[in-house]
Length: 345
Image 1: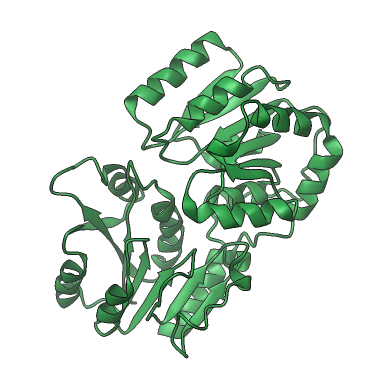
Image 2: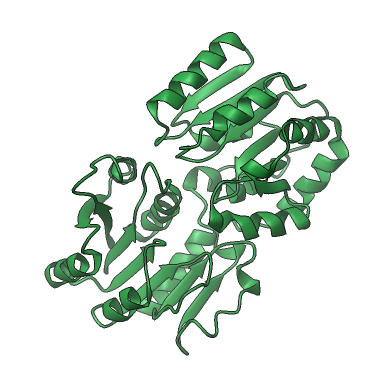
């Protein structure tokens, strides 16, 4: 049994994407190993990382907080105490120094990457994204660094892996639309989109309220749902069950896209973070999603028009579903665990 450190943060300004995908990997690894999460905490703003820490604790993992001013030093102090064999990092708040210093204090280190922008002195790289296999990592990694690239290594949550959708058909009549923009929405994009699509041809619009939505946004969403009986709100839902009932989704272009593909739901992509831009563009060009633009570049009625287009065009939805079917390996995290164990044990 290994002791494993997973370093990931989530919160009101950085979202919950890093935490959510690391929870998938942590659950798989914890069946055979001891896993601890290392999460930054802020001395000046206790709300900054609260939602991420709470999400991890909610999933029954131990969280050890580290200072955002002394990340490397705190990890080294914890390593003296716990003697972890493996450190896996999923954070954009890293640099070459971070990797170089920590590599000499752990037998193995891994990094969950999306962008391939800096030199990464690690034992392995995980990049689950659609475009990962087209990235040239050779200049940013060591000669012996293992690469786990592409959607064959998708970290899909267990609730999606347990579903059986072999016989799912594309309905002729669209009745249910999903709107989900992730755990955080500081620019109130959920409300902006909802106001534009509330009068579309669908019968119901199912809106996800993320863990890190602020009080004012949540209150506004509640008010609009009171006026429009077709709008249904969900806080901390079982996403697989909610997706199962929906015919079309409007979604941020993070890891949720892979869950939607596994559920075979035609999707209008909305980019809300820098790391989503390239993935959204390539998935859109390949007909896996439509749209895939930055939220602020959509014309006033464009998202509503795209939604109505998908509602009317059953053949387009069928084509998107056929492309989704073979994109994602729903057991990618199991494969990932096997590869990590093969390397580290």
